Length: 225
Picture 1 (cartoon, helix red, strand yellow):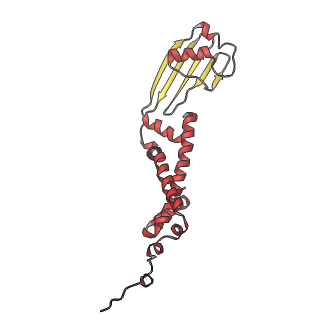
Picture 2 (spheres, rainbow, N blue to C red):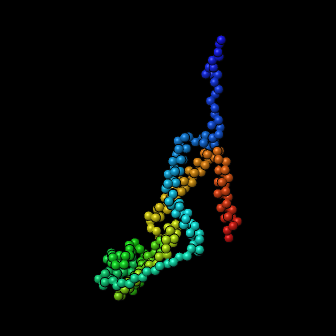
Picture 3 (spheres, rainbow, N blue to C red):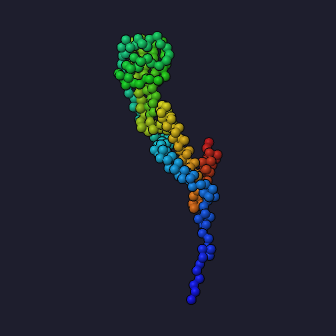
């Protein structure tokens, strides 16, 4: 009795069904770049996580600012600047507050006037002290040294809203907003590329993306007044 032995040449060719189901972009993009898309997507998501939650929540509070009641709290303080310190201010009509008067205001009233814009008149020095979530000012009577300080706080919601807008937040926060915005762009673009790579297996991908474009465009064109 003889048995037929199947040679290697008789074996069926390897299946290419996996390649046929890949999206056109996935077939063109090397595995290296696919890994890069995933890596940059999850790294940018980590950078954006806290900032995106903050900006999303404050977007809601800003959109309903008229419905959220604020309860401002105003603090006023009075003091008299010593003549020896006041003498350093007399005769000035521009520029920042000099060192000795600035140090006295910090020590006695807890006011930091460094790098603050000043307004000078013949009889008064006025320094505006805006900050996130509040406003303030201090004035010094150049004749008798009377100091009046006032600070108004509008609460935590106003504070977070001002962070969203970058109002009176300083250079460091301004840099953070710029870096955060770039990270969001990277997150969105790499997400779009990953959507393209996996779109063939998820048929709802492009209808959802199209809805994200069409809905705000429709509202901008037809629903705004």
